Image (tube, rainbow, N blue to C red; front, side):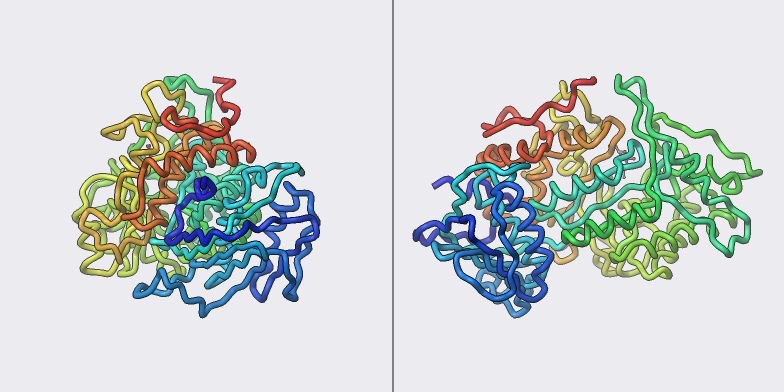
Length: 522
Ligand code: TNX
């Protein structure tokens, strides 16, 4: 039986009772109970496109179709003894129909993604095709190991527009990722519109952040690539991304990187500099050369305004303030700046997130530390003394910007032990480095874009490695096997290719189909 071969992440419990398959036929309906409308519409949109069936969404129960239920009292035997899995679901199918019960709308949405993968790969076809729309008889109980399962897009070094970000969301959600961190600012550029506020004591022109800062992008001719893409999100566009993500159970975590990685802000807002002496925009790939000034009152006025506007645009609980690689910020000033900025985040009603360097500063007790590199001691200490939690992004297991092999046309290679195939991103446990499992919120795979030009090249570095990460974040550690994942990746290739995802066909996987390469212009 080869059907479970398309399931990524692998469910916690999968039973094959052996009865007849369910076959989806032209007259079938989707039955949606209370709180099921969004999942029903998402499922219907995919199924209608590829099957050509009408698939009306009905309230009353009918037979011979797909029934969706949200049941907050859902009991999963497979979760006995553990916490109530809010994102959990149960899926059963037999010849009479498919029933998906979610413990919440998010759980139901996850179950719908599993149903997609139980159907033939043609279900991902962009237009109607003839196929035998068969779902094997299964009993699935499923829930995530970690509640935070994220990817990061660095839209600062090279911009991805709203349509490209939405496409990335569409791709990631089928693997049950539920967080998208947007790295909105860096030395090279500033990508989020900040309005000039009514109360503006120093008369700063925030509009210049995007008017000038939005034109920047990385341009490192040494890499043999063209320049990065310029651009920025208006506040309305950012809200459009947030709403699109929210509907699909994805939390947007916006990042404004401070106090380092700020050259674009320094270039746009002269008052942030001593003697108003603004630097020129800088498009090199250098890191660690810029800093906000801890002794300049404008720094705090600026940071507060940016954080408050971003907090208003963000319904989710987290606001990421960077804190990495502030190599020219004197350490005492770094600690003072980060403490102050983190408390501004709390004052704006959000939980601060920062790269692990920031764990050395005084930060609110419920802060989140994103571990990427270097010493773990401050991170471990904050989780044990203060109750902080950790998002694991150890570079050697999650950095999606790294090359696959020395000959990869794009990707960086600074991380020790690289280059890295999907296997390396599968062979680790996020409960590590002395952080207890209950302090690990989850994991995130960052895609830095020094070498990435557009969404299809992003796909190439992300997939298949992000699939390994999706399973690390979801599936119990003891049931994961690399050889079994390799087989499932091969099957998933057919789906990704139909979706137009330009994944990298790893040589150690037997791919059912391959996409078009995104490198014709390199
Ligand atoms: C380090 S990871 C950085 C980024 C670079 C990345 C390239 C981190 C918190 N900072 O500024 O883009 O390496 O891999």
